[in-house]
Image (cartoon, rainbow over all chains, first blue to last red; front, side, top):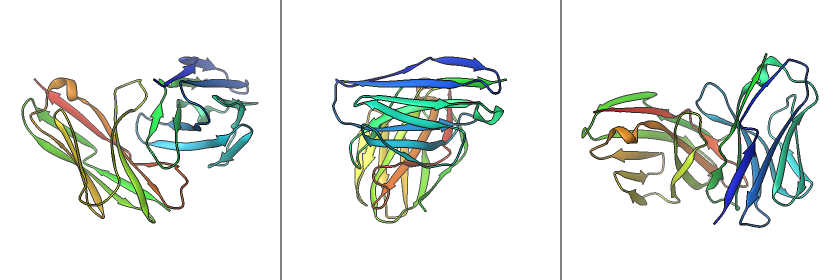
Length: 111
Length: 111
């Protein structure tokens, strides 16, 4: 069966510091991968998606970037965090137009 | 642009009191409507996918239905463990699998 991992689970960072969040998927190959942010515990906003290694599409202009160095690895990064980057970050995998499956999430607090 | 509106924002029920959650959507060429359950501090858990008007899916006390403009999540005789945020999402013909989420309905079931 497929499993999706995210780490760290929680992170507290000062403004202006760098960020690296990692997501890995087990039990499947060549998945579509997605990064979402959820503010105030409600709706999810799609940040990035990837249909293959090195292929990244950005949905919202922002202070963040994403990379996919391996088939089942997706990384969310920032060079300098802003207060507005605080939130709950979720990684998901899916295939085509079918349902997506989410990881446990990373709670990021920028102080 | 795809849009999803969920109502009500919050719903409080007594154990055993059946009710429905609504998800209204606007999408160009619906390819799928998805229901998720999210517990506090966790990633969304996939419940159902509906692909065409008239389709219904059931799982335990939950039943999802779909029309051309909206979807309902019916909860029959809910229990306190059904308390969670329920999220609805859609993907359309031009979205390439990207999901657009509603803001969710926070369901609380009192014993």
